[in-house]
Length: 320
Image (cartoon, rainbow, N blue to C red):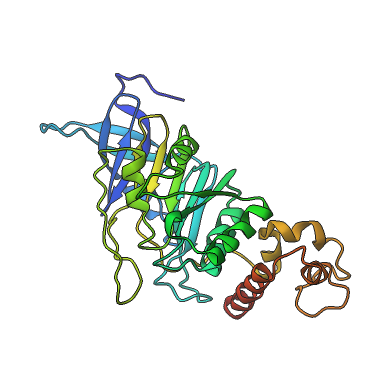
């Protein structure tokens, strides 16, 4: 419930985080905040406050031109997009959740058609995380479409056949950017993907003047240099917000158990209940309906291979 605008307490949206400071957008102003000390005593297993969080803020007196405040409460989250913190050791007691954004209603995963070459297994990990979070809208963006080869186009077409929305765009010649701009309007979206795929360039086309830094792709390593330093919710002129995040080279979905992985592959779902065993791994059990669908060409071999690889890794890391 919004508080009176003249009250010392207001409800707002966290739009930026940096080194213990949080920028909160209320209906009337931007407020630079820190967390109340009592909130910092909560669990160390996850971020207490991230972009997308809705928070209660108590204003503090300040003689400068910057309005300051203290976050006194974090409202319950509808959903979060999380991954295992890259520095954590998977499967260990110290494993930690890294919440990338809270309360989003759309995930936009940007991949390049060339340099860096798109890796479907990386894309699948993004999709698993989004499916786990039950994000209502998931969009795959194939950028640099003007440079795409037939093999790459065929790879992206597999995801369209599954039912994902795939947009073919080019920041350089602005192909498909109007459609992407419309898709972002009035949503809270995360806009992420591997480094060097052109996320910042696309954002500059979608909304001129954002001033996003655009870095050159490393020719030696064919991996992009990180040009976006801090996660931030950027307000869109047409309405809504987009979270521009640092490029992600690896993503291990948070809290995905091996036995539930098949549920996060949408094309598997119609066949799972038809397997002879309720705990079928879809590897070598007799009467596996999923594997039979692969053999009939109803599930792509690329995606089935991806499932096997992720499942094997989860089995190695999972602590029973």
